Length: 264
Image (cartoon, rainbow, N blue to C red; front, side, top):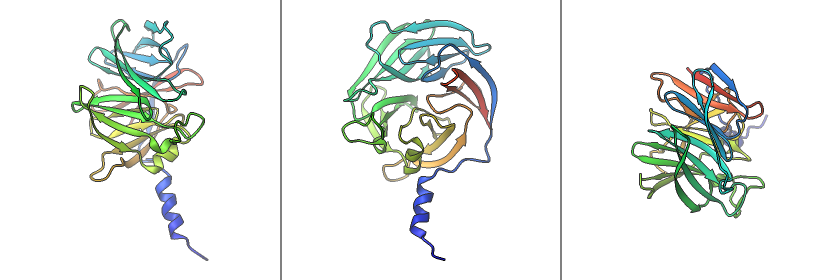
């Protein structure tokens, strides 16, 4: 019998390992009229993000209390959102158009009124998620290995970029090969920075949460583990108002559910 150690090493590098020791348990689920791209959450409400519209719902029963829709035609593809204070920051791109262009659209969480914008303009990737952590913005720019590929860049060009509060770029990192394979042919669709300093992200459609950390050296994020989820990729949110538990808000697009779960 022949052994092929090199092949074995390649397999280990490209196939993510599921965190079997951790379990995801459903707490609630809400079936809504339209759930396309992602969800954000604060202490009392959650916010459903669609391509060019938003809805605000109570966390207790999912009742819709506010809505907003772009009537200008200027917004094409909102992806995810994060609540900071009383502002909802939504990532937006011109996906699948090329050249890629992106912005962050800012809303008042009380009224869902559009109150601001930060434009990245033409950038080597489409912005899919952003978070503010430890005094900096952390922003993911996606690239794809399908018809949305731009300028010859496949999903290996997906990048996490660190900016100052006033949007000066500080650092950037590539994603590890096994996570990129799990994303393929798409890219990262959702992400956030945990209180533990780790980076949690999702792909396009797999029920998996990938946990990464900043490298001690080099330029590529380090893979930590994969946690199975009940929601199916896309943009998610960690409910930071819940202490001592990892409570996840995610979505399933085919049946328009927002699913609330806890990860042990």
